[in-house]
Each structure stands twice: as structure tokens, then as C-alpha cells.
Length: 449
Ligand code: ATP
Image (tube, rainbow, N blue to C red):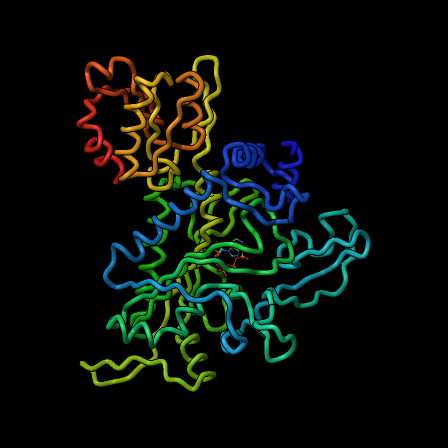
């Protein structure tokens, strides 16, 4: 499959910036992201995460889980089902309202989301003005059937967000975990939206992964927790290496807010096409629990024993996209720099996000070096995701690791057989230190926390 084909398939919206094409190219070349069903000519706007990409995507999710669940005593996890009955989406309002306004261009047949057009009268595909049909509302949920019988009564939906899983399990989780508000339920998983205009690589796809948390609070504390989560979530991106100048928190204007939300802010990243959303943090009031209580006939309340009163908790929701965030990390980390007469491509990823943490590189593939190098690989691989590479010269191997963001390369050479030491090369500075093999694990452990 030619690279030109791949680039075309992968950056459907065109490339607003050469950096965009370079990153899409790197993703294909290094097994980060492939266009899906490529051998059948491609399946529009779906992507497969390759051997390196699957590690990076998992690291994005693990970094989120670590800070949102593992390091907190007030948040627990959940993995709810993707297939869901219509009652959930009736109650949540998605059946009626999860729509985008769609127009067709009479001249070229292209479809667009009216709310995303720069000029609502002009078709960005063919450039013609005043050719749009009247806008009609298009529901974004994928519908299918459960069981062998088709027809009404058997309809089920692929969830378009993970959040409803947390609301419908509020009572189960609260009862079994014995948490009291303020407490949260977090979930990472696939969501599906029949987007009218997917594009910009993995930024907007029809199948994607979300990282969402519903934080249930006493009503009087909602505003304070909303502000807390806006700050905490911004800090998470900064702590994982996003440059501050490419990140902003944008509060929604009143006309952007859903009717039940008293405040929503987006964490936005400066993509090649401009500022765009990575995550939304919303103060949702008691809307979700009240809707599900009304539609299901089950009370979704908390009984505060100390105050001897019942209340419906309010909800603060930080909702992020895992696949979209991975793309932003790639864009922020990608750098080309001149080293002597050569151009070095390097992904300056935070070590928690980097696909591999360490690469073990025997200087030569001769058995006397390859044997102990493989032993070293196996020792380190018990603690971290490690790569092992014995092909080509060492300079080329360093560059290959730079391109996928591996923070440390460990070279085992002929001297290692005598001095029981190895050379460790750091990705960003390219500095090298010689370390006794016995100290290597501890040295890496200090740096890879
Ligand atoms: P947008 O305005 O971009 O359509 P949204 O406001 O509808 O997004 P939310 O419903 O708040 O998005 O979803 C939370 C997060 O899920 C988004 O911030 C984004 O990171 C991610 N997300 C939403 N839709 C998609 C998609 N089609 N492809 C990839 N990620 C998505």
C-alpha cells in the first residue's frame, strides 16, 4: 500500500499543517495507528492501533486511571456494558436530543454539520454558496438488534458515552463501596457516535475511547467541586508533559450550555487547525439521577445519617477522549531537530505516556552479546514495557527509539562482558552514562515513577 494512499486515507480533512502529515506518516511507519481495513481499500474514519500505538493508548488510559482512581480514596471504578436498552437513552435525553444539525450540498452532495461550518451558506467541499438543503436533525446513536428477531422491542443501542453506566449503577456502587458524597465513579471504554463529519485523523471518529468520571456531591458543594475538577484536570495534562502554551481552559458561553448545566468548561489543545476540545468538565446538577429515578421508578438518592436527610446528589463530570488525547500528546511531543548533518525525529513524550520505557540494544548480534542482552531484557521486562533490537548499527537503532519516544536505551557492549556495566543513553539530551548492571534497575526505577 503506498504511503500517498495512506496519507490521503488518514488525513481526510486535508492537511492544515505539514506537521499533521508528518505525524500521520510516522504513525503508519512506526506501527502507531493504521487506517482500518486497508487491504480492502480502507474503511472511512476507522483506525487500528498498531504494536506501538496500543502501548501508548494504554498508557494514556493508565495515566488517567492512576490519577483518577488509584491515587484517590474517593473514586471507584466501573466497566459497564456497551449494548444498552432504549430506556436508558430515553431517560438521558439522547433519543430526543443527541442530534447534530445536518445539511446536504445540492451541488456536490457533500454533507456537513451546520454548527461546524465557518460560513453557514457556503459548502467547504465545492465552494458554492446557497446550495444547502434545510438543516435536519440527525441522531448520532448507532442502533442494532439484540437476538435473532428483528423489529420494534428488540432495538438496542451502542452507547454514545460511558457516563450513563455510572448513573444507572449509582445505587449499586454506593451501596457496595460504602462511599459517601463527595465520591466518584470512573470508567474507561469505547463509545460510538455516527458522526456526520468524522476526520482530522483520530480526532473525530465513529468508534473511540472515553475516560469519564461522575463525581457525586452534596448540592451545596457543587460549585466548589466544579472549580476543583477544572483545575485538577488541567494540571493532569501539564503533569504529563503538555506545554502550557498549547493548553487552555475555555468556559462555555451561556448559549452553549445544556439546559441542565450551570457551568461547563472545555480543556482545549492547540491543534494544527486551531483550538479544539480534549475534555469537557460539566456541572450537571441533579439532572441525570433525577431522570433515571423518574423513568425507572427507582429512587437514586443518598441518605445523610448525620444530618438525617435524603438528597439527590449533584454531579460534576470530567469527560475526556482517550484516542483524541493520545493524538494531542503525539502532536505536542513531535520534534525534528538538526543533529550534526542529520535530522533527528524525536517524540519527547512523558515517560508514563511513552510506549516503551527502555530499549535493550546489544552492540552486536553475536551470541556472546545477544545472550546476556536478552537476559537483561527479560529482567527489566518484568517491571517495564521494554523493546529489544539487535538489527542495524547502534546510531540507527537510537534514532528508531527516538522516533517512538523511548526514554532510555541500554547498550550492552564487549566491555560489558568484563566490567559488568552498560551504557544508558537518555532520549532528550542524548547524554550517556555508564552504569553497573547491578545498579541499573534501581537507577531506572527512580526515573520511571
Ligand atoms: P465534540 O464537540 O468535539 O463533538 P462533545 O462535546 O460532543 O465533542 P463529549 O460528549 O463532551 O464531546 O465527550 C467527551 C470527550 O470525548 C470529548 O472531549 C472528546 O475528547 C471525546 N470525543 C467525543 N466525540 C468523539 C469522537 N467522535 N471521536 C473521538 N473522540 C471523541
